[in-house]
Length: 299
Image (cartoon, rainbow, N blue to C red):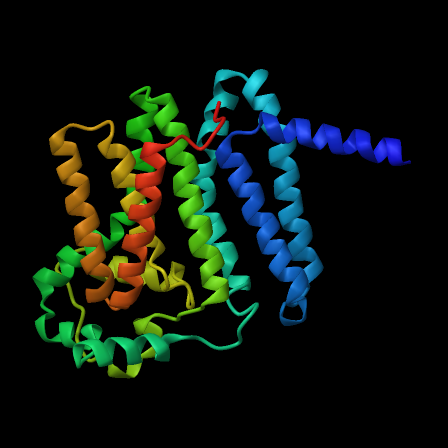
């Protein structure tokens, strides 16, 4: 029996070594999440199902990744190269089960007290004085740009044949998102549109797309995933990597998008300023590390 266990362990280590950094990152994320579930399982209904679900995802990566890498067709390889991008929204929605895994409450009051003491008035409340249809429309479009930033950035690198840069892009975007999700569990923050809804008096009427976009956010968004702003953090990482392959105009376009997105998260009452600053620092740190140093074996 010990010999058999040793053989299985060697096999798993061998499979692990064949994985790209992004595959390892996803597996590590789900194992870390399972660790939190095992420790705080009393706060999660049907917790064994959640751990099995995550283990199955890890197992699929361990089995499919080597096949897709060495023996897959062009179509299989394409799916393998793009599945991390497609998995991000599903990981986000999956986090709804775990926001209050560790803490039953939320830490909005702490952030509100900090920002009020620092500025004299909560920036989210102060910004309501400038709300106008034109500004709202522009800000809402900037906020919606996040849904396209990751796939567009990935497409620029992938189809531009920046293979090594694309692999590192996948890894560091996934790492940024994974860190954000773990912080969501350890430090849940509802966000101003939930926690201080009674203090939001502005009428966020836009011109054309605002009503639809805000309704979509209301349906798709989750309470408790405000700190840090994963929108901002991931967008900064994408901007950093795309900037390595784009012209000056391309870098300027992405910088404009990230700047507008950062402002829009506060203007639209989706995040506190603290969330945005934390997202900026996280994104800049990971983006700088990612473009200066490869994460190890990728392909």
